[in-house]
Length: 215
Length: 215
DNA sequence: ACCTGAACACCGTTCAAGT
DNA sequence: ACCTGAACACCGTTCAAGT
Image (cartoon, rainbow over all chains, first blue to last red):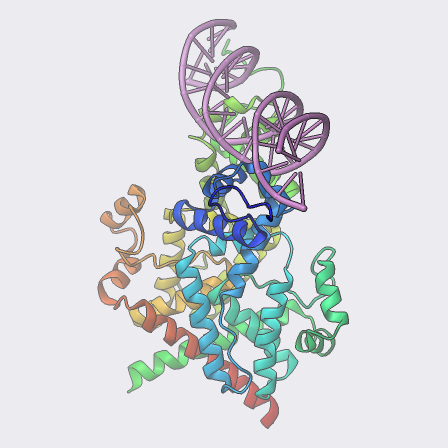
């Protein structure tokens, strides 16, 4: 006697809306993700989506969150290089599945909690392996742009506008311990970090070159 | 007796249209770049822009080109590390001036000639310093995402759709000699390159860590 | 509680018309 | 040769109305 949802169709949900949006993006590109078209993919009018998503912007944020969620998080006891490799390859595979990912992530005006959580995981992995907060911070900038390209100076309180309240809550709850340590312990000299990361890569390149021609 | 352009206003031009679009993006963000608003910034109706730009997409491509053009190209006799640093810092400064740059570059569906030319310059700098095409190729992937994030596998003929005819012309004219050598000489094993670049960075990080804690 | 239809302001683009 | 006004199809979003 419970009122059945209309003939054969599964009921809408935030999850289903976001998945449909990702499907549309996979099939026809990011620009094809319109409220009307996502609705159409679900057999529903565009306006129905607003019952499950605040608007287009929230829909895009939700897609970004699901995307970051597709990156494997290796258990804490995996050796650090192996863990970094798994994450990197997993992120790369996600971008392969969803070629619109870099454009989407680059277009999001605000850092999302999912992104900070992801970076917190990376930071933790490095710091448990003996990296200082300073070097871990640089490592993130170097490694991350390599895979997803959504790194900004997440840990610099002055670098962004008003942060997502959910991020502040997570910090207050102690849910992002490594991110917190980076904020407290690392010197936020953007230029120095950039120079450091750059030299680090350049030294690696030079060694690779000499190894190749020398041996 | 030459018919004067309308009272006081400079005549429109492709250059002026693109500059106005960049100004709008600088001031109000990339989403604010609409034909109507760019026209407004020039004191003109939106439809006038079509006399100087094929459409919105061409306008965005033009913005991307101007952006890449803002990156300094050091003379060929500058020592390679110094040249790489100058380019990197210059690109970084461009992104600082135009925060919408990563989103714009990530959103362009096709590689532009300006981008290939830029990468050709980088490749040349490295190869003149003794790098193999293989290592130079990897170097580009590693270095470039660090700064602008527009690297894709430019040199793999199968990796993209139909390339811009202007790019093919430039190749045919021998204007991109280093890009050509990379296409011919480098093995296009994307996975192997990714692994190599990743290990290169990881080794660098490990060394930085040991240097810090050891000394 | 969830979905809809009509409406509004805005978008890219076409085209015939102006000068 | 360049600019314009009106028009078209499409967009995100609001809101009153349906069930």
